[in-house]
Length: 175
Image 1: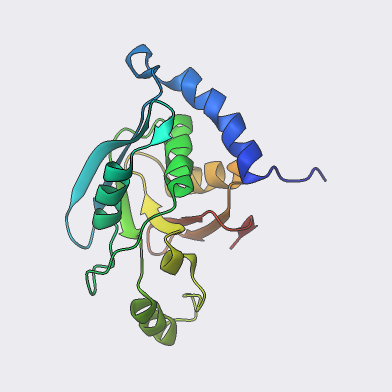
Image 2 (image 1 turned 180 degrees about the vertical axis):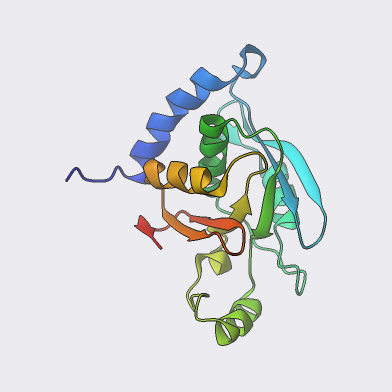
Protein backbone atom coordinates (compact mmCIF):
# COMPACT_ATOMS: atom_id res chain seq x y z
CA UNK A 1 0.00 0.00 0.00
CA UNK A 2 1.43 3.38 -0.99
CA UNK A 3 2.07 5.91 1.75
CA UNK A 4 -0.32 8.83 1.95
CA UNK A 5 1.19 12.14 0.85
CA UNK A 6 1.95 14.74 3.50
CA UNK A 7 -0.15 17.93 3.57
CA UNK A 8 2.74 19.78 1.93
CA UNK A 9 2.88 17.19 -0.88
CA UNK A 10 -0.91 17.34 -1.22
CA UNK A 11 -0.91 21.11 -1.51
CA UNK A 12 1.88 20.99 -4.08
CA UNK A 13 -0.12 18.46 -6.10
CA UNK A 14 -3.47 20.24 -5.91
CA UNK A 15 -1.89 23.63 -6.45
CA UNK A 16 -1.18 22.64 -10.05
CA UNK A 17 -4.62 21.11 -10.53
CA UNK A 18 -6.30 24.18 -9.05
CA UNK A 19 -4.41 26.46 -11.42
CA UNK A 20 -5.38 24.23 -14.31
CA UNK A 21 -9.08 24.42 -13.43
CA UNK A 22 -9.30 28.15 -12.71
CA UNK A 23 -10.61 30.48 -15.39
CA UNK A 24 -8.08 32.68 -17.15
CA UNK A 25 -9.11 35.81 -15.21
CA UNK A 26 -8.17 34.06 -11.95
CA UNK A 27 -4.82 32.80 -13.22
CA UNK A 28 -3.08 35.55 -11.26
CA UNK A 29 -3.23 33.34 -8.22
CA UNK A 30 -6.37 34.27 -6.36
CA UNK A 31 -8.18 31.68 -4.24
CA UNK A 32 -11.77 32.50 -3.36
CA UNK A 33 -14.22 30.68 -1.14
CA UNK A 34 -17.90 31.14 -0.44
CA UNK A 35 -19.38 29.97 2.87
CA UNK A 36 -22.80 30.28 4.49
CA UNK A 37 -23.09 29.66 8.22
CA UNK A 38 -26.41 27.85 8.68
CA UNK A 39 -26.70 28.89 12.34
CA UNK A 40 -26.21 32.63 11.87
CA UNK A 41 -27.36 33.03 8.26
CA UNK A 42 -24.17 34.94 7.48
CA UNK A 43 -22.44 34.44 4.16
CA UNK A 44 -19.05 35.36 2.83
CA UNK A 45 -17.59 35.15 -0.67
CA UNK A 46 -14.09 36.54 -0.73
CA UNK A 47 -10.56 35.74 -1.81
CA UNK A 48 -8.49 34.47 1.10
CA UNK A 49 -5.23 34.14 -0.85
CA UNK A 50 -3.77 36.33 -3.59
CA UNK A 51 -0.41 37.23 -5.08
CA UNK A 52 1.33 34.35 -3.33
CA UNK A 53 0.10 34.98 0.21
CA UNK A 54 -2.81 34.57 2.58
CA UNK A 55 -4.83 37.75 3.12
CA UNK A 56 -4.91 38.35 6.87
CA UNK A 57 -7.88 40.73 6.76
CA UNK A 58 -9.93 38.23 4.74
CA UNK A 59 -8.91 35.35 7.02
CA UNK A 60 -10.25 37.41 9.93
CA UNK A 61 -13.56 37.89 8.09
CA UNK A 62 -13.83 34.15 7.46
CA UNK A 63 -13.04 33.47 11.14
CA UNK A 64 -15.87 35.79 12.15
CA UNK A 65 -18.38 33.94 9.94
CA UNK A 66 -17.10 30.61 11.30
CA UNK A 67 -17.24 31.72 14.97
CA UNK A 68 -18.94 29.67 17.68
CA UNK A 69 -22.60 30.59 17.21
CA UNK A 70 -23.40 29.62 20.79
CA UNK A 71 -21.28 32.31 22.46
CA UNK A 72 -19.77 34.44 19.68
CA UNK A 73 -16.16 33.39 20.39
CA UNK A 74 -13.79 33.47 17.44
CA UNK A 75 -10.43 31.94 16.75
CA UNK A 76 -8.19 32.13 13.70
CA UNK A 77 -8.96 29.31 11.27
CA UNK A 78 -5.95 27.45 9.89
CA UNK A 79 -5.62 28.57 6.24
CA UNK A 80 -4.79 24.98 5.21
CA UNK A 81 -8.45 24.20 5.93
CA UNK A 82 -9.45 26.84 3.37
CA UNK A 83 -6.95 25.34 0.91
CA UNK A 84 -8.60 21.95 1.41
CA UNK A 85 -12.06 23.42 0.74
CA UNK A 86 -10.74 25.29 -2.28
CA UNK A 87 -9.14 22.16 -3.76
CA UNK A 88 -12.41 20.24 -3.33
CA UNK A 89 -14.34 23.14 -4.84
CA UNK A 90 -12.10 23.04 -7.92
CA UNK A 91 -12.24 19.26 -8.23
CA UNK A 92 -16.01 18.98 -7.79
CA UNK A 93 -17.08 22.16 -9.56
CA UNK A 94 -18.72 23.61 -6.46
CA UNK A 95 -20.45 26.82 -7.53
CA UNK A 96 -22.68 27.75 -4.61
CA UNK A 97 -21.44 28.58 -1.13
CA UNK A 98 -20.51 25.69 1.12
CA UNK A 99 -23.15 25.29 3.82
CA UNK A 100 -21.33 25.33 7.16
CA UNK A 101 -22.85 23.32 9.97
CA UNK A 102 -19.93 23.82 12.35
CA UNK A 103 -16.72 25.81 12.11
CA UNK A 104 -14.92 26.95 15.23
CA UNK A 105 -16.18 25.62 18.57
CA UNK A 106 -15.11 27.14 21.85
CA UNK A 107 -13.85 24.72 24.50
CA UNK A 108 -17.07 25.31 26.50
CA UNK A 109 -19.32 24.53 23.53
CA UNK A 110 -17.32 21.48 22.59
CA UNK A 111 -17.45 20.15 26.18
CA UNK A 112 -21.22 20.63 26.27
CA UNK A 113 -21.67 18.85 22.92
CA UNK A 114 -19.30 16.06 23.99
CA UNK A 115 -21.44 15.47 27.10
CA UNK A 116 -24.55 15.16 24.93
CA UNK A 117 -23.10 12.98 22.16
CA UNK A 118 -20.45 10.31 21.84
CA UNK A 119 -19.99 11.56 18.26
CA UNK A 120 -18.26 14.74 19.47
CA UNK A 121 -14.59 14.28 20.32
CA UNK A 122 -13.38 15.82 23.56
CA UNK A 123 -10.21 16.91 21.72
CA UNK A 124 -12.00 18.08 18.59
CA UNK A 125 -9.99 19.94 15.97
CA UNK A 126 -12.93 22.37 15.76
CA UNK A 127 -11.60 23.86 19.01
CA UNK A 128 -8.27 24.58 17.30
CA UNK A 129 -9.79 26.11 14.16
CA UNK A 130 -8.63 23.11 12.14
CA UNK A 131 -11.98 21.44 11.29
CA UNK A 132 -15.25 22.24 9.56
CA UNK A 133 -18.53 20.40 8.94
CA UNK A 134 -19.95 21.24 5.52
CA UNK A 135 -22.24 20.33 2.67
CA UNK A 136 -21.93 21.59 -0.90
CA UNK A 137 -25.18 22.45 -2.68
CA UNK A 138 -25.40 20.66 -6.01
CA UNK A 139 -22.86 18.03 -4.94
CA UNK A 140 -24.04 14.72 -3.53
CA UNK A 141 -22.76 14.23 0.00
CA UNK A 142 -21.18 10.88 -0.86
CA UNK A 143 -19.34 12.53 -3.78
CA UNK A 144 -17.99 15.25 -1.47
CA UNK A 145 -16.86 12.58 0.96
CA UNK A 146 -15.19 10.49 -1.77
CA UNK A 147 -13.25 13.50 -3.09
CA UNK A 148 -12.12 14.42 0.42
CA UNK A 149 -11.02 10.85 1.11
CA UNK A 150 -9.09 10.72 -2.19
CA UNK A 151 -7.28 13.96 -1.32
CA UNK A 152 -5.63 12.43 1.79
CA UNK A 153 -5.51 15.94 3.31
CA UNK A 154 -6.75 15.10 6.80
CA UNK A 155 -9.62 13.52 8.64
CA UNK A 156 -12.94 12.89 6.91
CA UNK A 157 -16.11 12.06 8.79
CA UNK A 158 -19.29 11.12 6.96
CA UNK A 159 -22.63 12.05 8.52
CA UNK A 160 -25.32 11.37 5.90
CA UNK A 161 -28.05 11.26 8.54
CA UNK A 162 -27.24 14.86 9.45
CA UNK A 163 -26.36 15.99 5.92
CA UNK A 164 -22.70 16.94 6.23
CA UNK A 165 -19.10 15.86 5.85
CA UNK A 166 -16.51 16.67 8.51
CA UNK A 167 -13.16 17.85 7.12
CA UNK A 168 -10.06 18.56 9.14
CA UNK A 169 -6.38 19.07 8.60
CA UNK A 170 -5.26 16.62 11.25
CA UNK A 171 -3.84 13.22 10.49
CA UNK A 172 -5.48 11.23 7.71
CA UNK A 173 -8.30 9.06 9.11
CA UNK A 174 -11.86 8.12 8.24
CA UNK A 175 -15.08 7.53 10.11
